[in-house]
Image (cartoon, rainbow, N blue to C red; front, top):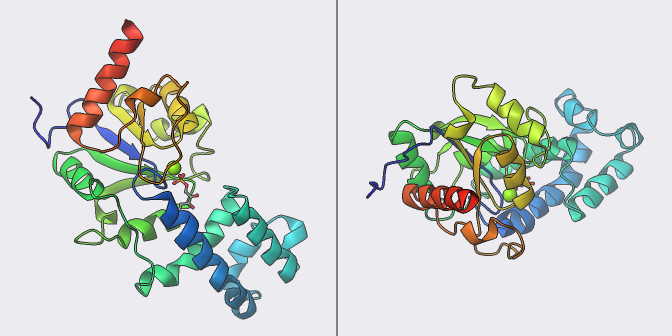
Length: 251
Ligand SMILES: CSCCC(=O)C(=O)COP(=O)(O)O
Ligand SMILES: [Mg+2]
């Protein structure tokens, strides 16, 4: 039987954030409202500041030069959960003070800190791929509810919709793989709550298993991978799910 710290065939654990390592409610009910709460003050104080220019100028032209249209557009994108890169960059900027002041703490599911810590100790690389911007991902993992709270030091690379591309595109996973030409795709595993992301990762040659977590919508019963969804991450559960998927495919 595999030891708890034995990650077997995997060299890279690529992890989604929302609905995979933390509850969806933290993103939707805490992070998104926090950003909207502080937005008016930021716009009043920083609209013309050079430090705000990179966020403002990334927005489409029709919103860039009109503060109220800008704010209304942000609110609309958040209400529709649009994963636009320019919104994600702005959100990361708006969350920074919240994390640094201790108001925001990322609530990792209890199995996540030991999973990451053990994988790191076993020599695996842990990487993140989220629609949240890379700066937002780094803030999230630097300020968690784990002990010690800074898990970012265990993470070796970070991917988002800017440096990899949309999470449901196969090409995004191919781009991520291309950063590590010496690691075969078969030695990667991507864990995500989104079956379209799981499908895209698998088409790139990575292994991928869906995650089902408290607070997530149930996965569609007609999808072939739903029966293998993981509710807890351990080396053994991940390896078993991958083996079960492979044996079903070859049956
Ligand atoms: C970096 S935490 C914020 C995550 C976020 O903004 C988001 O849209 C979540 O998307 P994910 O790809 O992690 O499911
Ligand atoms: Mg997710």
